[in-house]
Every structure is written in structure tokens, then in C-alpha cells.
Image (tube, rainbow, N blue to C red):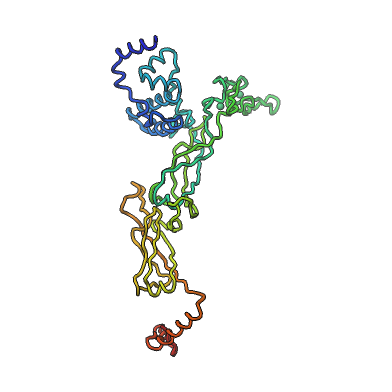
Length: 411
Ligand SMILES: [Zn+2]
Ligand SMILES: [Zn+2]
């Protein structure tokens, strides 16, 4: 109850503080019910965005960076989160005075996520870890409709249990053999009176200059763990098939370096008929070339020649493209019909896809002749040909322009 009364007192003294401090959930752009994972994700994104290295001479960004780190530390801890949820910023101030955990240096916290010394290291002499590349297969449907999806990769991460120290109790000692230099110097006598100094790596600490008495049980003192990490992937409508999407500082982590970039290389999945209704479209088997789509439609001899047919093609988003000819309209074999606006959404580097722009759909017609015919039917057709070929046949020899005399006519 003591807590309550002093809390009320504080409320009266510090009404200004209540007005100034921004809500931690709002600051991180998350819900009151956010999970630890969502809190971490928000921190990862925002701390990079507002890091002072990325916003030189921007006071407001610097403040935001510090606030984000504070919000993260309060919300990731069950105890402080509860206090914050119930009593807000003043409750926290009270808790801190009563010996609660103090905040880390915001750059320290940053380095626990991304390694290095809490900076991006552009020009700062910081080592940078290697970039990673990962291929993500995406069905054509997602390139057409756009998609918000997730993928998971195994990568090296800074051990959360020991916060990258490698030590179970947080105690890291300076190596007594090399005095923290990680190197030892040996004197070798080359000849009487002539010495050479040789530098070699200290085997006692493995060149780190530090030793750990009680190794962290999770990472066994290595400071890093191999773990699956999931990332969200936003595929914009019409994105190129071989698009590369960079995820800054999301490659392998280590306390010794700033994490490099993870690069997602999109590629188009082989078409397969899905199980869901919306995956069972003709469009699944469209072929893509840049902004255009290609499809092969099969017609019977009768359809190609005499017309009077329709086809309903279901596109990748389920809308129907109607093909067809009226009676008497002929389609030549292997001819291509270009249907404007039914291709891929056109995507721009700046601004993605604008609603009205689409490529074309190219439909190639394949005509299939019957290879078997009913005897009576064959006879009838034969009779019709015989009757008409002499009357209104085309002189193929004349049409071909070849100097061959021929009396061969055909319909
Ligand atoms: Zn040593
Ligand atoms: Zn550990």
C-alpha cells in the first residue's frame, strides 16, 4: 500500500511528465496485446530507422532512438511491462527508484541485436559481417495479386541468454596469460646474442583476450547460436521475377561485427495446381515474360474454321477473360491474339504498381485435327469436298508464285 500512496503523491507532483512521455506501445507501433516476438520485431525495424548513424545531425531522430530503446526494455520485461500497463510512466519511475533495473545504454542494446559496437560502422572502422543471400520461390499468382508472406531462415544470432557475453553469470575476465591483448610475444634466439620477437595468438583465450569461468549453458560460451528467424516478405504487384530485396543488417550476427545484409532473391515457382479453389485457375499456367503473359488455347478443326465457340479463362485473381468467335469467324492455326490490359501489373522501382497499368495477354491458338473419324462421317465430308473443290477451289500454284504448272486445286 505504501507503493500506492507514494504513487498518488507522484501523480500530483509530476503532471507534466505524464503529458510529455509518449506511450510505449504507440512509440513501437504495436498493440497492447503484442507478443515478445512482435516487440522485438518492432525494435529491430525502428532502431535501425532512427539510429543516429543514419540520421546525422537530427536531434529528433536521436531522441526517438533513445525512446525506442527504453520502450523496448520496459515492454520486453514481464515485471516492468505489468507496472507500465497499470501505472504508466510514473509507476516505472517509482519502480526504478526502488531499485528496479536500470536502462542499458541504447547503443549497447542495439549491439545486442545487430552486433558490433552499436553502430553501423560506415567509416567508423567497424567490422562488418558477410552478407547473406536466400532464394524465395513465389508462385506467379503472388506476383500478380501481390502478397504479404513470411519466410524463415537459419542464421547465426547473438545468444539472448547471455546477451552475447558467453558467460552464465555475466562475468568476463581479462585473460591472465596475455593480459587481454590476445597475443603473446616470444623471444627466439636466432644466433648467439641475436633475438627475434615472435608474436603469436594466445592459446589460453583463443585470441579474444578474455576468459569466461562459467560458460553460458545455451551457447556454451560461443556467444552465438544457430537459430531459425522469420522475416516478413512483401511482394508488390508486378514485381520482377528476379527481384532482390535487401534486409539491412539481418545476416549472421556476432558480437565481433555489425551484421551484414540479408538479400532475398525472388524466383518464380514452377506452376502447380493448388488445393484451394482460388489456386485452381487457368492463370496458374500462364507463362510470364516481363509485363506480358502467355497462354496456349486449343481449338478443334470445326471451331477454328467455322467459329461459334467461347472459352472462359480464369485469370490469376479469379476474374474471367472471355475468348470466342462468332459463326463464320476463322482462326488460323498458331495465330496469336493480343488482349490488352490482361497481362501483368506494371511495376515501377519508385512507387510500385499504379492501378491502371497492365501488360498484355498473348493467346496462341493451336488447332487440333481429328485423327479418327466415323466411317459415315468421313464419306459425307469426302463428298462435300469433291463437290466444292472444282467449283470454288483456290489455285495453290498460282498463289505460291512458283513456276510449276499444276491443275491441283484445293478449298
Ligand atoms: Zn589470452
Ligand atoms: Zn549464451
